[in-house]
Image (cartoon, rainbow, N blue to C red):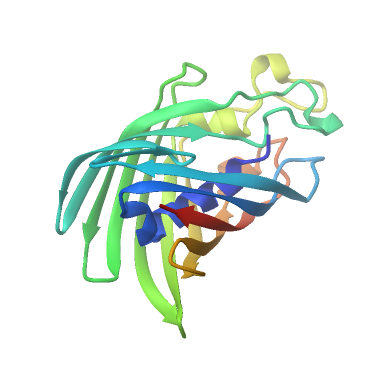
Length: 245
């Protein structure tokens, strides 16, 4: 499984596109590319990512998870959410990572946004792992603003993600049973990962839209000091076509 970084790109696309707020069914397919920070793995991973969502009246479900509106009134929105968490340590292929295999997990939590104007908003997401793999937490804070490149709308987001010791160690650490002579046990403290992303959606027809996103994560020292991590940034991109009805 190599969907960790592309999934984050897909979430950015969903958040930026007004098409997802309209009631109805959306589906499509995208292509992804992402760097892999783990030792011994291919420098770049490519893959196909499905786009699928149904937006109901005050609720949604799709490949970006599920959500139920708790409050929606300008300038504040609040939502209860469920999100799958993918990791590139799910069945890794390198000899250096032999014996390490992480599961896909499920997070639940709350998401808030506050509109600072017509184009700019602040967002906060608080997540708790629900599947019992690591019992970790994540808090994500970001600011997004809309721009235009000619006729192409752009959404620029900058933020930071705090990950608890349990979550950080699950994603980047080495557990006791995974340690070897060349790979010592490694636990992370809580860590903060800054990131930047750029996303856009361009109408191809009344029903079809070209969507895309690019995201860069800047891994902190606690992550890059891990014996299984060799890069200090993760760059990912996604482009796809979605149809809405």
